[in-house]
Image (tube, rainbow, N blue to C red; front, side, top):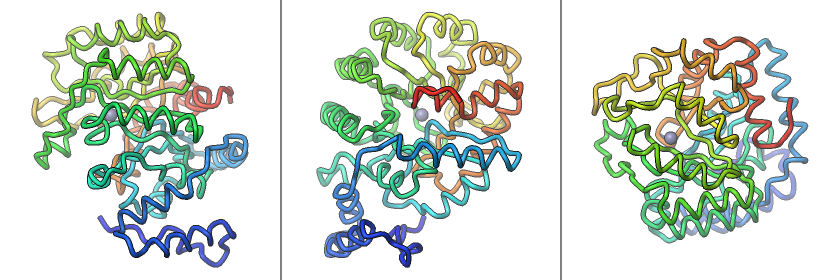
Length: 364
Ligand SMILES: [Zn+2]
């Protein structure tokens, strides 16, 4: 993956004063390592997210995609490596795939965390520069920023989510098996197991409840993990919780209870529970178990009535990550294949209306 050029280079001729100022700060910072300079520039320039300022532009982009005969999508869950992203290529792929907006979170690179910089505001910067494309999301709670210093991560999260008015928190990894790509690379350090009802989980859910800001969780589907999550949802009923990866089961023997029936009862009992629909294509196999882990495809006849009955509780999601930033088109094709299984009215809600309502409180 090539490193990004200084991000404003292509638009230099029509740079506004504020951007020129940023460039000066960037140039000053060149004496430092590239990583540190990118990061410091972001920290120096971050401004709070202002929905009212960007609302019209986002709606215009949604409408433009619809006018072209394509169902527009708001992706509720993607993250990038802020140092390595080629933003222009990324946005081109969004255009090609009809992704109107992406809720973009940053996974702070491990070497920066080691240097003591635990949080990045790069997502705010990207959204400030391209407000029609990106909705800024708090940092991804993953290895190492979250797993090695969970309390510090929560301190940062609580402070910055409020101070910079992020409309959503990042994806918190409580139980996370290594992804298929990490398995291939032998990266077993992503095998995360932090109890959801731990003191950190309690603090996070309490903050979500207090602030009203939605949070995302990565929480593998396992029988033994269901009861603690159920307890937390019951204990913090006003916390808006997005459980990522509908029906992504990597070891079927460990998940005998989860299915449309269980989820239906939870959706009824917990009105602030949402489900994101990022999962792999039908043929995708999770190597450690040799199972096809995206179970939606084989059980879609059972899942569809549930989604149709509660369309505003399901959110379109791509789950782009730092190791697949060049695969927006491919991941979008999988998401569209899923949306195509739904009746058009339901698909429209899941594709973008549910995200808009959850994040901004408006029904489109
Ligand atoms: Zn996830």
